Length: 548
Image (cartoon, rainbow, N blue to C red; front, side, top):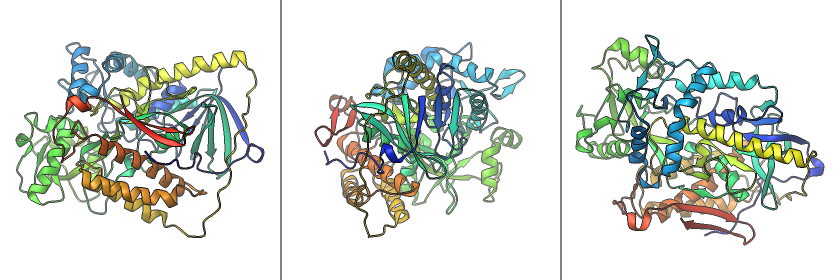
């Protein structure tokens, strides 16, 4: 429990800022957000606000595909079972069943909207990835599924007459009045702050990978949605569960490019610096074990060999097939002089997918009235303690559709009862500016390094306690300031969410899924087969947490 930090990031007063009115506000322009936009009634006005260009989302950079039961020999029950094995008993079985049974319908919608999935002889090619018992993953452009899916969905959304898109606009905070979400305060691409009033708001801001030094996520993934929802009073859940992707290209000084799970599904092998294929020592499923198992095995092997990485080897596969199947990876590696048909690829784990987030129900409704959420910013119950490969784009599609439909219906009901938008009396006073300059880049880099060391693939009380003390120190003099640009706002969001993640990792004294405590190496179902939640309580002036 800690003392409350400021409710809003910046000062504002309705008299001195422009106002914008929409029936539905969607914060985030990834797959979940745009799928929500396409579910809205065309009679409603909608605004999509995205932090960067519309293409710069985690969805766009997804190399893996979308999991779904499309093969006549496959069964929903098998996909459900694979998901439950990966995520364990923290999965909500009702959510798992719903999402997986909707998968074929949602994938077919994408095809109807113009998505070109990879085919062979007129049939969609189905791949296999870690944790899946069958080939059921649809891909596009080989290893650039997200790019093709987002191309089609962006094009469709841009044709909607009732939807406006604001690019390069930073959403600072959700506006709440009497516990109800009324919209958000947004800084547009010109730096102008605008009060956006909405009858319903849908949060689809994506992940938090940039909190870590090693991450597959694009620069925009700085936990903004998690932080603004928490400041507004939404319940966050499962914040200890950050999934680390086992195979991230490791080149000193180079960008951390994702090496898709599918490359192991097609026969790629993991070897250490001595060329030893090591996965058999950790799991009988070898390279196709779930991500948490492979990530932990890689870290153990790096320690044994005292080497900064391991290697992914596809040199035994047909070189023509490798280049056709993985053109993006081949091109990324070639920039560093690595020919993947001849050379081993240096890899190590990196922060990849935030399992925890805003708690939502089956239709994407959050704990705050008129606030909905979908995608990686949420804790829906689909992933449990470890996400199954290629279930993330699927979750964005299903929950984006549900949140859009639910928000649409609620907005229509409000529209019928009140034609005019009412503007509540909301303002935030200016803080006394500090004369002491801050090196924001230095604090950010220190935070990312600290989180990787203390709250990464392996955790322990000693390191987590150290991290909590350091983050609290930074919070004391960073969160009380009011910045004027994204560098400050992002750092404040990263600090706010990092602290919750550390608290959650400290509280869960066991190892489960992606959460590995070296001082509590076993799973404890008696005490910990349950969820941790966090809630800001402005009425009592405290931050609370609990177990459910």
